[in-house]
Image 1 (tube, rainbow, N blue to C red):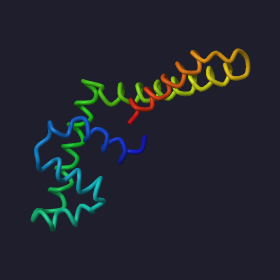
Image 2: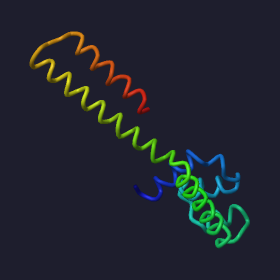
Image 3: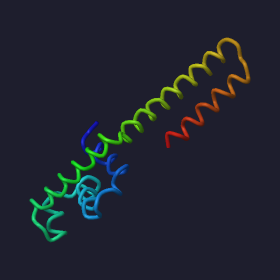
Image 4: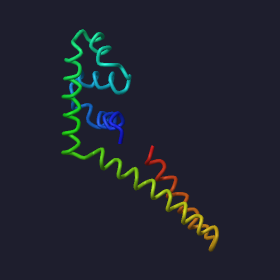
Length: 120
């Protein structure tokens, strides 16, 4: 996973556990794509101060993930739901080619629909 995406996900899951300043700096840097210098000018601190704050916040996010593993479990669930959708489609395709059971078709459509809702 790309670091920007990983930090963004970690921030979504654990951002409330950071200080407002840490959330702001990470948001400016990763979401708004501001440079360290731009953030420093906007916040009235040094570039090094911004870098240190971002690194500390990143470290905290990674430590929280190593303890709680919420992002890992979320990604596993997303992957599993994708597989469920694919398998439901295979069941539906097989049913259409072989037995044409209306119930199987309805159930596979319901499984796919529910899985897609859970992915959103």
